[in-house]
Structure formats: C-alpha cells, structure tokens
Length: 333
Image (cartoon, rainbow, N blue to C red; front, side):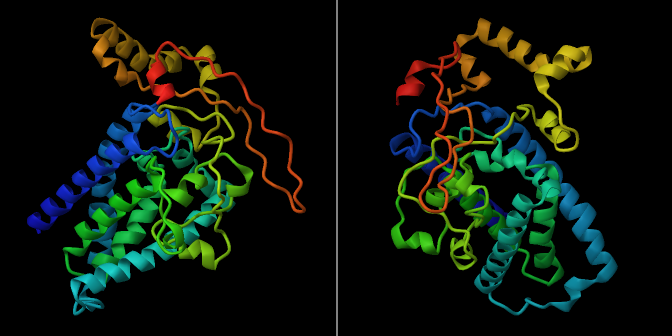
C-alpha cells in the first residue's frame, strides 16, 4: 500500500510540473502570472491544510463509523473484481453523481453557497480547482470514497482513485490552449471547463461535467463555442480570505464596509497584508508572496446571445490600471 501511494504521489508531482510548463508555453489566457492573486490561499489553505483536515474527518469520523455500525464492507460486492475494473466502476459512477450534484448546485440558491468559492477565482489555472468550500468537499468525497470502502474494494483503489481525481482536476482547470477535437465529446478538458468558469450568461448552466464530457452532451448542457471568454469569476464581490469565504457562504457581507465598522475585523483582515508588506519591503525578491492581480477589462457579466440572434447589452469595458504590485511583464506575456 505505501508503494502505491508513493507511485501516485510521484505521478501527481510530475503531472503538476508538466502542466505548469505547458501553461507558460501555450497559455489559454495570456498574461496570467504564476503567482496570481489567491495563489497562496489556494495552495496552502485549500490544498494542504483543508485537504489534510477533511481527509481525517471524512475517513475517520464519517466512513469508518458507518462501516462499523452497518458492516457494509463485509458484503464484498466488488471484492472479486480486478483492480482496473473496480477503479473504472467507481470513476464512472462517481463522475455521473458529480455531474448531477454540480448541476444541482448551480440551480439551488442554498447549495450554490457551497460551490461559489470554486467560481470566485478570476484567474483560472492548474491550482484553481483546489478552491472548494469545506462542506462541498465533505459531501462529495464522502459519497466518493464511502462506496469504495463499504463495498469491499481493494485498498489500493482509494489512492489510485484519488490520484485520478487530482490529475483530472488539474487538467480541466489548467490555463493551456488545447484543441481536443472530437475527443471533447467524450473526455472533459480545459477547452470546455474553462468556459464553465467564465462570467458569461450562456454558461451559468452549462458544462457541468468533470471527467467525462459526454454527460453534458447527453443531457443537453454542453457549450463549446469557437471563441474564448472575456470575463471570469463571479458577477459579485467575493471575499479573498479563506475564512471570510466560508463565513460569506452563511452570512453575506462586504469586506471593505465591515472593515470600516469593525475594529476587530479590520485588525484580522489587515494582519496578513501588513506582515507581507514588512517582509517584502525588507526582501524584495519575496514580492510574489503577495500574489499579483490581473486587471480585468470588463466590469459586468458578459450577456448571452438571445433567441433569434439578438444580443443583450454590450459588455462594459474599463481601462485597466496597472497596480504597483503587478509586473508589466506579466501583462504582456
């Protein structure tokens, strides 16, 4: 078992290196800096801290007690299957579930709040897929891994399935300009999923697939135009701090206004910025720790094409002003 985990970890690290390299060579959206805005929040808090904590909660405090109480794993439903068959079975069935749950999240005002953080990034890249609300992860990974354990699958299926999920999640969010042709009718990739993260009306309810694009084509939610999005992220202001993002899903607030009213929030909200500023003033080479924003040319949601060929109001473009922390080279690459 440790050998399998070592191999899957090595595969994941090599894949990350390949994707990062391709993002620099053939970017889907030019001008995105590697240390983009929110990079450290996504890498440290979402990828490492949250993933580690939720893994313990999901496996030790949800799945294990369920198995001890009901004894489902004693059924050995898939025990006699070959490893590849077990992996394929759980990959396909979970992906089918994810399509419908994802689609439901976009339609439900309540469950949208568990998903909006995932769409909050205005700079989508290989790491952007890690930004997901803790409750969303608990729901999806419990439903993903509980059947693997409760149906008596081989223990190796868990790390293999987790590796496939991570590799695919990086792939569909990566900032790589790829044209997959007819393959995009079957296998999902950045070509369609980057559109899903666009702030365009036509994709508010489209491209829900994760691994297999055919779910979208079968159920009529596929959108694959011959042009690229103009705007990304959410059509409303969203907190940039990890903890504030989770609070925002429960109680709506404006960070700037709350900072004016609350001395406590102002102190909390500004502590990271003050510490980073002092650090980077002393060591200028560490400026990437701030994360560089990319000026956005459009301020409003891009309207969708209406039936009959009529368009809505023209998108409002603004003259983006360079910030002091934004390297000009990052905007011209």
